[in-house]
Image 1 (cartoon, helix red, strand yellow):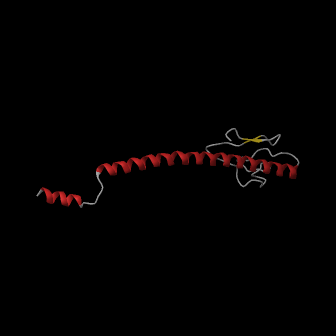
Image 2 (spheres, one colour; image 1 turned 135 degrees about the vertical axis):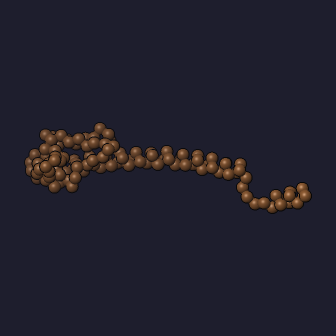
Image 3 (cartoon, one colour; image 1 turned 180 degrees about the vertical axis):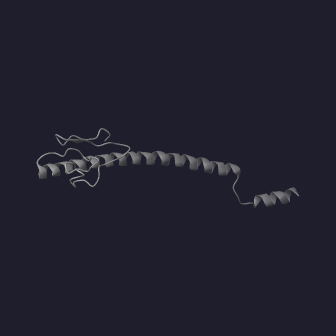
Length: 116
């Protein structure tokens, strides 16, 4: 009887609990590495987006100055007046993000963002 059980057990193809646990641990470690790598790429994307928004507002501000002879009063206001970059049509909408802000100085046309 013992030989027969041993023979059946020898031909049994499958994974042991230890092998399964090792695979699960390896997959957990790999997923942890991927999560941290993706978050680094996300931060790079936010920085690039911030710099692009600052450059877009700078270009719109200079275009407004070239056409009108003075800098716009703001990027946008509630009434979308023609003295703002959005109201005059130089920007489709004011840049907005929960992760950074774009500051505009009306008198000089200076554009900055402390987050970039």
